[in-house]
Amino acid sequence: MTNRTLTVARRLASGALILACCAAGAQTPATDAAPVNARQVPAERLAHYWLLLPDSAEANVPNSGRGLDQPTCALVSYVIERNGTTSHVKLEKIVPDGPLGKVAVNIARGMRFAPAAHNAGKDPVATTVVIPFNVPPAGSDKVSDRLLRTRVLEACTLTGVASPAK
Image (cartoon, rainbow, N blue to C red; front, side, top):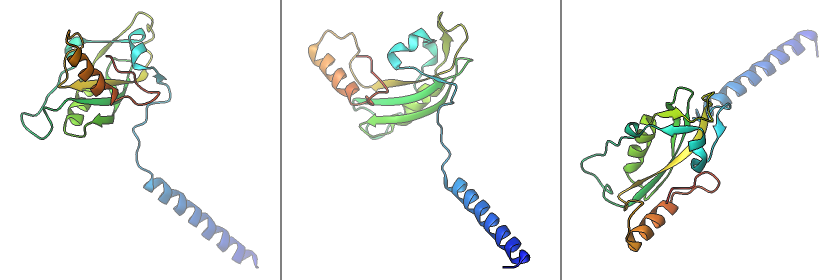
């Protein structure tokens, strides 16, 4: 091979490599992964870092639709940023499948937090929340209510990620 043939071959190989890299990047879906600097915190330990502002968790539920009255739970992951807002909100699981998943995501997007005493640096954290719909209240005196609530919420656990409040 001559020098000119080698140069052309190298340019073609470089161009093919660049095209392959670009094509691979274009096919990779954009992810909403939690930022690297966010500490992973289990839901049961969140109060050590951030406290939910009660008026911030509001639901805007549709007036009509399939499955709106069924006992449902939704597992939502999110990041609490330094300013107490949420980001990287993602529906991880909903049982049973239905329109309440969008409601759960909107609730998590609207949540606002204040830093706990142990989080003076306002460190961002990645965590989860299980949001129940149409289940008896946690403090119910009826055994049947407590059993129903437990059964519904247990369906939304994601091994190693969330522990729902019972």
